[in-house]
Image (tube, rainbow, N blue to C red; front, side, top):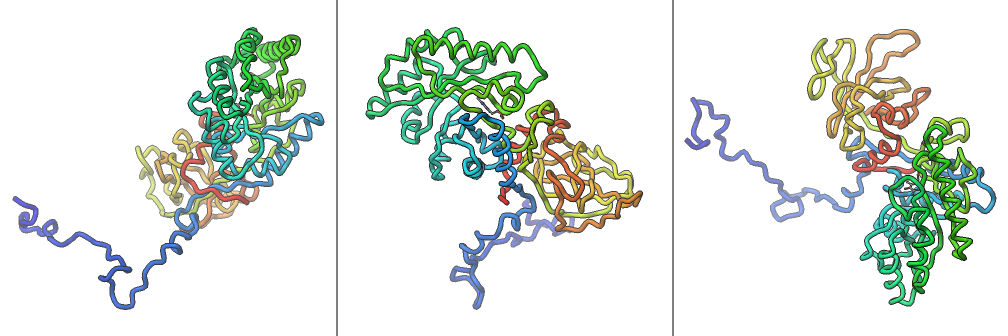
Length: 425
Ligand SMILES: *Cc1c(COP(=O)(O)O)cnc(C)c1O
C-alpha cells in the first residue's frame, strides 16, 4: 500500500500536494507588485527582537571594580585584568577596553586565540598568556605580541629559536609551581631551569609568577607555604644574578586579603566582574556585579491544579498560579541544576522558576493570591523578566545561583556567554 491510497476511507494522509515551497520574491516567479526583502535590512533587526532573551553588561560596574581595586595597591604596582574565557562571559574585548580605560595596565588570557582576538580588535596593551601553548604556536605569539608563560626548557628553546630566526627577542613569564601543582617549574628547581635556558640569546624573561591554590579558602598554612616558596625562589634568582622581571602572585582573593602578595603586579579576575572570590572579602571591598540577564515572557497560561509542568512533570500546579514561559534554558547557561532553585523577578517581585529547565526554554510561576503588601501581578506575553540582576528591591545574584548549583560564580557567569546576545550599557 502506498500512502496515496485512502486508508479505511480516511484520506487525511493521502494529499499529494501538501509540501510547501518558498517562492523567492526577488525571482521571476514573484507576483506583480510584491516587495522583495532587503537583505541588509532584515539582517539589521535587533537581536532582542529576534529572540526574547539577552545579557546586559554594565561597563560602569567594571570600571568601578578596577578603580576600587587599583586604589588598594601600592603606587607603582600594576594591575592585570584577566579577560580569559571571553572575559568570564562578559565579552573579552569590551571588558579589556573598559578595564584599560579605568586604570588596568595589562591583560591576561588563557589561550593563544584569545590573545589574537584582542589584537585583531586593535588592543595594544601587553597580553600575558597564562599557559604554555604548543611550541608550534610560537609564530603567533611573536607575530601578535602575546607573552607566554613558560615552564619547560623544550618550549623555551623552540620559542627562542623561532624568535632568533626572525631577529626578534622572545619575551616570557616564568611560571613557578609553589604548591598548586597545575603548571610551573617547581620553586626549588628554578635555578636549574634558568641554567638550561639563560644562555639563549633569543629568550628574555620579562616576569615571574605563581598562582595560589587556597587564597580564597579560610586562612590556612598551605597559602603561607606557597607564599614562602615564591619569595624564596625570587630571592634565589636575584642572588644568582637572574632578573625575575615583573613579579606577580595575587589573584582576586589574595589582592584583598593578603597585601603582602601584591609584588609588582596583581592579576584581577573574578572581582573585575563584581563577584567576591570568597565570603572573607565581603567587608574588604565594595564590588558591583556587571552582568544582568533578561528575557521576555513568550507564553502565559493557567494550569489546572495538580497538572505538571515541563519534562518529568516534577512540579505540579497548585491551581492558584499562572505559568509563564521564557525563551532561555540550559543551552544559554541557565544550568539545569537550578531547576526549581532560582527566582526570576517580574515587576519588582520574586517569582519562583518551576519545572525542569529545558535546553532552550523554562517556566516560572506567578502566584495569583494576594497576601501582605504583595501586589497582584498580571503577566503578559512580552513582559520583561529579570533572570539575573536587580528589579526594584528584588535581586537575583550569580552568587546565590552558584551556591544553589553547587559551583562558583565563574562557571555560572561564563555559562551565559554561549548563545545569548550581549549588550553593553
Ligand atoms: C584565572 C587566573 C587568575 C584570576 O583569578 P581570579 O580568582 O578570577 O581573580 C589569575 N592568575 C591565573 C594564573 C589564573 O589562571
